[in-house]
Image (cartoon, rainbow, N blue to C red; front, side, top):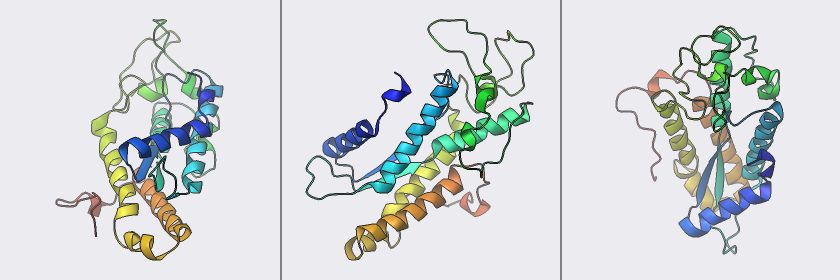
Length: 234
């Protein structure tokens, strides 16, 4: 469907349904990524719009004990889109595209992003062709190229290589859950206001995304033998 069909109201409806039928108190939403389905730069702008919508919903979410439709107290954002975008941009730079790797600039994903649409020649009307900077380890020669030496980021422009991205993905989920259930935050739920709790969680959320959903190297102490990242009750 058209990315424009995704609205704030529909996202909130899905969150309420998760709370109503699964009893979830904490919901983690991953930001959208680039894929073969992004056919135009307008599509890409639409992806960024939805991602910002997700962030806004999470920041402004208010839990109401009187709301029988949902039990969701907290919404956290996993910046998976940011992580995969950084990987695509860095890979594109590596194989010869003119790409700026300054990820600290606000809105960098939308700047000079036309290189993403450099694709293989389409051979089937039932599927979209792959983006070369997304799937290639070497930049193919020729305009009508239909294949390349594939990288270990994405095998097909739709899915991600779990052995490479999976560890950071799993670690980020555990870290985000820990923002709610680890340490002293469970104490704050009982004794402090919702706003103070929300502020603490947003700081923790940002730290988790900076640590795992970016290309910042993971500290060696987090990958030693015996280290665990799962959330646990205090």
